[in-house]
Structures are given as structure tokens and as C-alpha cells.
Length: 483
Image (tube, rainbow, N blue to C red; front, side, top):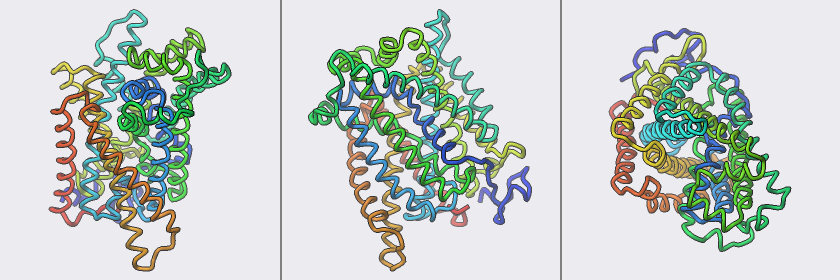
């Protein structure tokens, strides 16, 4: 067993009765919402994911597709939050899945989730490095993408080493700045009654929702919501978690969803329906900055270029924090070496886990440099594609777990919750997520850059990670999902 001894460098102050260590923090609802929203990277999504979704998906129907994805995630959140009182630990999706489907399935999901978030971390380093290179080029300075990536790696590691409250404040400032500039664009577009064609017909023309490739559009929408399970990952570092987590989950999904719906509608309207589709295909990276320049002036356009980079850094910092807590929590349960479950004496942070996560990311970035991968179209596309698949599988597994758990309680006469909340809503969410899962598999090749080999590699890697966690828990029956 990995975790036979208490982690070194801990004291009775650090430990609970079973010898496991808690992280320290004092986050409330809004602190967690900031981290979740920063993980989603709203400005990065509006500047990158949304134009690509318009081009590859269903064109002007993308704004309405965000409504569909938000509703599905809210239905999922009903099952997620209903299970929260029965999952008294910071294990997030994998602990929720283990509650209904057993600890071996839970540990399999834990390793799958860890791989998915590590992949996203590496991918975002590529996208961020590319963004920094483009920003420096606009100032007449040339630098390879990996220079910016490694500089940001040092900054993210430094913040991840410290208490989560510091990261929370940094993320809050960056998030308010990036959301503020997009909302300023939204307001300007609405005040001017849209662009040359008025407001987009994306909502008033039902055929727009089903045009083009609506399945691929839905996948890009889900990609824009990645990370909202962080509401449960930070359980030990928030006040009154049984109240905070459900409120933060509903708030995060609703606010992020409304932001994407309104801002996508405004962005398309700023160009006009036909022109929006054209520019999304011709130069997707220019779609948001160009709209800001047209409506808010050239200075604001340059500000957006800077905020695009800070948005990706905020996203990166959130992923670093979530991933390091995955490593910490899995180690605390005995499925990874005990040293990864140690807590910094002064900062109360998972400093060792955070440093290990950084080393893994640094190695993969180095490999990308050596084999000359394009940081955006290959490194980010491939690795973010893997994360999207893992994310959908975790949503599906959590929903099934909720139905199984509450179904057992209903059958045994111990169900005290509303049937509509714990049976009907999760069942509807399950049907929706099953359909999304089919779309993921059908469109996976396009999601990872058009390579069938990479698509198979993604599925194989995720299957291997799940099997690894399942096997570890089978060989070590003494390890538990419970804190």
C-alpha cells in the first residue's frame, strides 16, 4: 500500500483522526465561482473556441446551441448537487461516481480525470505560448512560443505553491478584466441595435440551430464549460461545503452559460450573419479583436489582445490548482505515493503535488518542442480534444451514479428527496449526455485536428488511465474513496 505512513512534514494540527491531511482555505461561493469561470477562460473561449465553433459547427446557430448546452449542464447539476451531502470529501466527479458505482469504478475515473486535466494543462501552455508570441509580434518583438509558455509555468507554479486564497484573488482580478471588456462590446452592440444587418437571427430562425454540423457545435460549447467540477474539488478549502458547493455550481453554470449566449449573439451581430460566418472561416483569431476595434476603438482592440493572454493564464492557473488537488486527493486515499499527499506547513497548499504537475507539463512541452508540434493547431487541439472526451465521460458517469444511488434508496424506502430532483432530472440529463457522448465519438477525429491515429490514441490513453486506477484499487482493497 502506498500510504501506510503519515505524510512527512505534518502534525496533529494538519490531520484528521484517520491521519489524512486537509488543505486550508476560506473560500465562499464567489471565490469558487471565480475559479470555475476562470477555468472556462471566457475571453479565451470568445476569441478562440467561439469563432471555430461558428465555422466548424452551425454558424449563426451557435449562440442558441449554448442555451442547449447550458440546460443540459443545469440538469446534470441537479444530480451532482443532490449527491453532494453523501460525498463528504474533495474527490469531485470520481468520488461522486464511486458513491453509486463502487470504489473501483471511482478510482478508475480518478485516474482518467487526472490524465484529462493534465492533458488540458499541457494544451493550454501551447495556446498561451502561441498567444504571447502573437502579442509580442504586434509590438515588434520576436520570440518562440515556448519562451512565454515556460515563463508562465514559473508564475503558475509559484502561485500554485501558495495558499488557494492568493490564487483566488489573482483569478478574480483577471476574470473581472476579461469579462468586463467583452460585456462592454456586448453593450455597445445592443445599444447600436446590432451590426450592419441588425441583431443576428440565430435565435429567431430555428433552422439555424440545426444547420451545418450542430453536433460539432455542441461539442465546442461543452469545451467552453470545462472545469466546473472545481466546485467540489475545493471542498476542504471552502466554508460550509454542503451549502457552498450546490450554490456555486448552479451560479457558475448559469452565469457562464448566460455570458456565452449573450456574448456569442452580440459577436455575430457585430459583423452581421453572413459576414460573421465568412470571417470565422477566413480568420477566426481576428473575429473578436476586430469587433472590439470597430465598436470600442483601436485602444480597446489592443487591450483585448493583452487580456486574451491574461485570460489564458487565468485558465492555466485554475487548471494547475484543480489538477494538483486531484493528485493530492488521490494520494490521500492511498492510490499514489504518500509524498504527493503532503501539505505545505505554512501555506496549507498541495505544494508537492503542484510541483510534480509542473514537472510533467514541462516535460510534455519539451517533447512538443523537440518534435516540432504547432502549439495551437496540434498541441492544444490534440490535448484539449482528449480532455473533452474525458469530461463528457465523467459527466455521464456521475449522472449514472446518481441514478443508481438514489434508485437504491428509493427501492429500500429510504429516499427523502424529491423524485423529480433525484430521479427525473438525472434521467433526462442521462439521455442528453448519452446523445452528446455519441456525438463526441462521431466527431472525435475533427476535434483532434483530423487525424484518426490521434483520435485512437486519445481513446486508448483514457481507457488505459481508467484501467490503471481500476487495477490499483483492485490490488489494494484497503484503499478507500472516503477521506
